[in-house]
Image 1 (cartoon, rainbow over the protein chains, first blue to last red):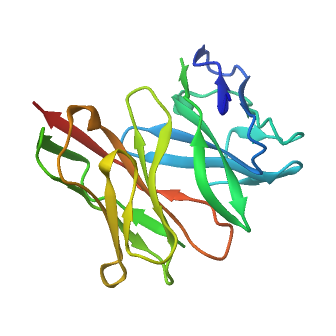
Image 2 (tube, rainbow over the protein chains, first blue to last red):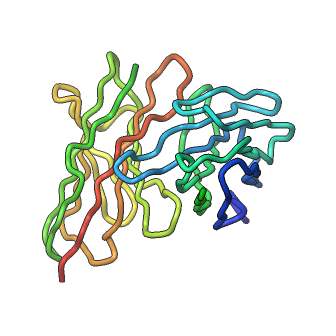
Image 3 (cartoon, rainbow over the protein chains, first blue to last red):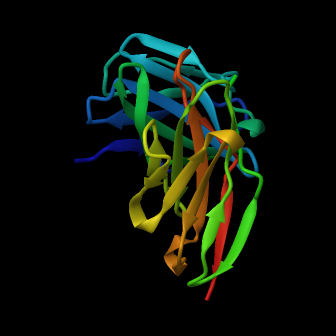
Amino acid sequence: NAGVTQTPKFQVLKTGQSMTLQCAQDMNHEYMSWYRQDPGMGLRLIHYSVGAGITDQGEVPNGYNVSRSTTEDFPLRLLSAAPSQTSVYFCASSYRTGAINEKLFFGSGTQLSVL
Amino acid sequence: AQSVTQPDIHITVSEGASLELRCNYSYGATPYLFWYVQSPGQGLQLLLKYFSGDTLVQGIKGFEAEFKRSQSSFNLRKPSVHWSDAAEYFCAVVGPGGSYIPTFGRGTSLIVHP
């Protein structure tokens, strides 16, 4: 049982480059989300999805795009990378009981550096 | 809007000593509360959660937390800390109603001295 799989684990970009961080889960979770983690800032929500075809913005969405064409996959796209996007990115998914996210399952993270 | 505060950025304890990590939330009604742990280089793992009922909640790895409505707190405790407990701990809150999206505190880094 793979759980939540994030790729790549490490990435270095130059300013202005674009890339996609991949996230896949095999638990049939309705809810998926992306967070960024910066020192002293905790986890900040970038985008989330409550089901295929449905996405919404979180606290810090600027500079990022997402789509949810399948239940399993929730890629995060950096349109034009900036040094301020240097961070560790986590994908998380969850069952939902009614509308409650019972427990988040996290991927192991992607460490991104933008030069 | 819901919010959660972890007042301690770092906590240092000796191995075998007791531990209490503080978490305060801001929400009008009783929220759903969580504690997660993050080991170095890893994603977060759920320690315990409170939805309703008994205000003292038991979790994995010998941790417990107590919900105190009067103090808007959900502090995490462990009677005897092990060196392997050194990690980052996050409190999270989900408010009933609205989007049910978890909001995380900024985390508390636990350092364990031998």
